[in-house]
Length: 318
Figure 1 (cartoon, helix red, strand yellow):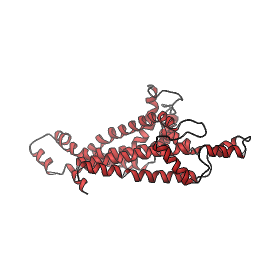
Figure 2 (figure 1 turned 120 degrees about the vertical axis):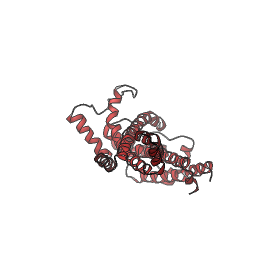
Figure 3 (figure 1 turned 30 degrees about the horizontal axis):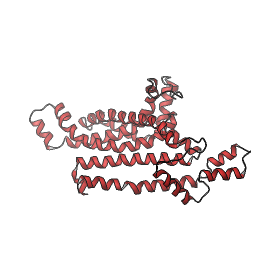
Figure 4 (figure 1 turned 90 degrees about the vertical axis):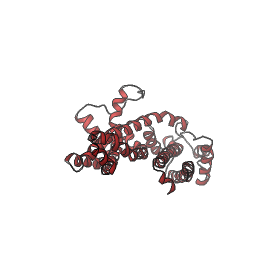
């Protein structure tokens, strides 16, 4: 199978996945008791049953669920994600406003993971089965096992309450490009990047340990090349293939993890907006953010598949 056909096949497989995600999410949101109209009625005792019926008709919430889904699908095909019912704000505008904060947080976590994991993985592979290797493996296992919300709370407890070094919560209306935001970004960035760092470190160590036992490494050593040159110029290059593809896959976990981390640190990104939308039963906003996260995760996995196929052509024929 050619690379072009491989990419086309993978791309077409996205369509049924997105359809399934939209159906399940739509059903779950509409089967959950309560909606913004009910909350508006509860907060305003002057509203009559006729007012409630009029609002439900306006936002298309008075028909059967399958009819509501078809209407929603017709709108998103033309790029109309509707409006937030309680405020009347355009959903697309809300997402575009919050998206930069989530991107910055995700990039910080992704960079943190690579910066920590690659040197640690190299060190562990070169010192295999020694004390440093054992400690790094223990830390990697801990990083994978610890939930994001618990790690975030511990960092807040230690960094803010015990040491008093951080004002954890970013001030409202602070521009994202303001230098102070880097300080507020540090703890949530470390929280969201820890699991990625642990996963990459384990793959890096395993990949390098396998490469160091191969014949070309033995030949390079026999030629008298310094060990540092053998590791950094020969072994590291081949070992990074697995790390690069894993890093693309971990983008998905960073996106999904942003929901919890942003809520814990009150970071004003899409994850925080998603939690607020769930609390308010904002159907249009929940669906739009879910679809956005779904597309991001699927594209990240698609990129990982393509990178595998480019780096190892045998995968195209599986």
